[in-house]
Each structure stands twice: as C-alpha cells, then as structure tokens.
Image (cartoon, rainbow, N blue to C red; front, side, top):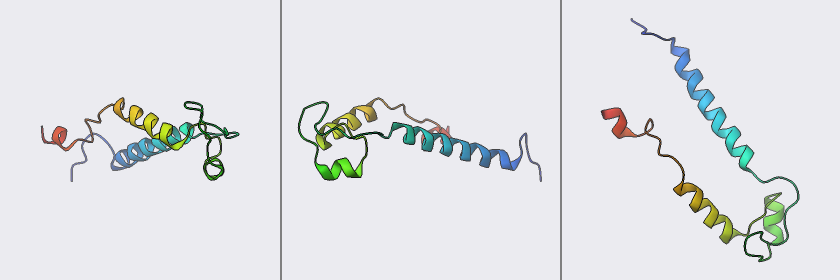
Length: 88
C-alpha cells in the first residue's frame, strides 16, 4: 500500500502536539497566586467559596462571564476543523 509523503506516525505526532499546545495555553491562562477579596472590574466582593475554588481569581462571576464572552468574539475561526473546508 502506498504511504504518500509522510509516515503514519507524523499525523499522530501533529495531533498530540496540537493538543499539548492547547493544554499549555489553557494552563497559562489560569489565575495563580492570592485571590482578590473584591472584583478588579466592578468592586463587588468575591465569595469565599470562589476564592478557594480558583486560587488567584480576580473577577466576580458576572465580570468573568462578560470577559469570557468578549474573548470568544475575538477568537479566530478554525477553517481546518470546519467540515465545509474539507468538502472543497
């Protein structure tokens, strides 16, 4: 059977590398250090349970949700993962 230009393991290596990069990027975005007692954006108190659950948290739930929505809007569209791009 013809193999083409690359080894079969090359595809798996690329997948593992992509997943590893995504995990490292996500870990780097996690807050660290001492949690704030009040939100850096609106000044509302951050509940003690949230501070314990997320060490280094700086925003209340409402402000964090808004920040997450803004980040999602600016995320690039992955054409490689799109089924449409695979059909063309």
